[in-house]
Length: 430
Image 1 (spheres, rainbow, N blue to C red):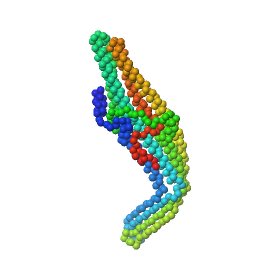
Image 2: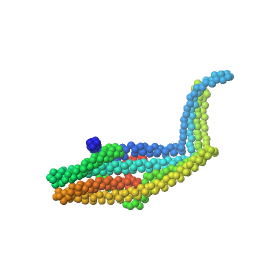
Image 3: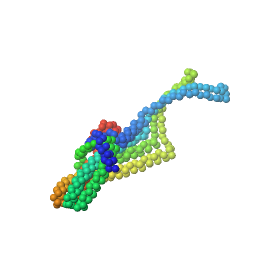
Image 4: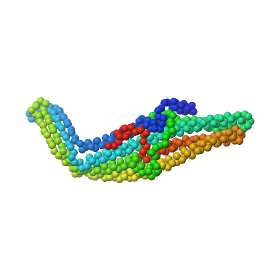
C-alpha cells in the first residue's frame, strides 16, 4: 500500500504542468473547467429571451402555398369532376397596441439576463475559490509530507544514536524501544501524508485540468476592504447573490404585468394577398388583397387571467422575502469572512514564532542529549513539538491564502487575473 501511494505521487509529480502560480491555475480553470463552460452556455441561452420578447413588436410576415388535386362525385351530371389547382398567399401583421405586454416581456427578459449574469458570476467566483482551496491544499499537503519526512529522518538518527548508546551500555533497552516506536509511528504517518497529497493532487487535477508542478507561494491579495463596514457596503452592489435576488424581484414584477396584459386589448394591422388558378385552365385564375385592423379584447376566460395575475403577485411577494433573506445571508458571509481573515493572519504569525522557537529548542535538547543532560524521551517529545509546530504553520499558511480569496468572494469581487473579452463584454446582459 505504501509503495502504491509513493508511486502514485511520483507519477503525478513527473507529469509536466504549466500552472505554477495560483493566477495561472485560475486562468487554466476558467478556460477548461466544464462546469463553468456549461454555466456560460446557460447564460447564452438566457440572453435569447430578449430578442424573443422584441419579436412580438416587429412585423410578422408569412408566405404559404398549396397545390392540390381534387376528385368530386355528384348525383347529377357531370357525376365525376376532377380538378388540379394551386393557391399562394402572403400575410403580414404589425402590432400597434398591446396594452404594455411587449414592454413587460422586455423587462422580464432583461431581468432574466441580469439574473443569469449574476448566477454566472457566482459560479465563476465559486470555481476560483475552489481552485484557491485546491492550490492551497496541495501546497499544505506537500509541506506536511516534507515535515513528516524530516521527522522520519530525525527519528532515524535518534534511533541510531539510542542504539549506539545501548551498545555502549549508556542507556537501557527502554530508550531504544521508545525511539523505535516513535520512528515506526512517523513512517506510518508519512505514508498517510503521501496519500493525502495524492488526494489533493486529484482534486487539483479535476478543477484545473492538469496536475500541479512546483506551486509557488501565492502573493498577498490586493484590493481587500479596509474595514468591515466598507466590505458590507460594497457587497450590496457587487455580491452576485444579492444581484441575483434583485433580478428575481424585477422578473417577478414584470411577470405580474405580463399576466395582467393578457386580459387587455390588442390592436394589429393586417394585410394579405392571395392568388390561385387551375393548372389546366389559365382563365380560372383569381387574386385578392385584404387590408384591415384587428382588435381583440378577451371578455370571458373563465377566470384564468385573473388567477394567473394573482399567482404572479404571490410569487412577487415571495421573491421580495427571498431578497431580504439573501441580504441577511450576505451580511453573515461577509462578517464571517472578515473575522476568518483576521484570525488566519494572526494564526500565521503565531505559527511562525512557534516553529522558530521549536527549532531552537530541538537543537538545544539534541546537543544536551549528547552531553548526557537530556534523556531520549525528552528529545522525542521536543521533536514531536517541532512537528506539531510545522504542521500548524502549514495549516495557517493555507488558511490565510483561502481566507483572503474568501473575503473577495463574499464581497463579490473575486475575479480571474486576466478577464477575456468574452467574460467582460459578450456575457453581459443587454
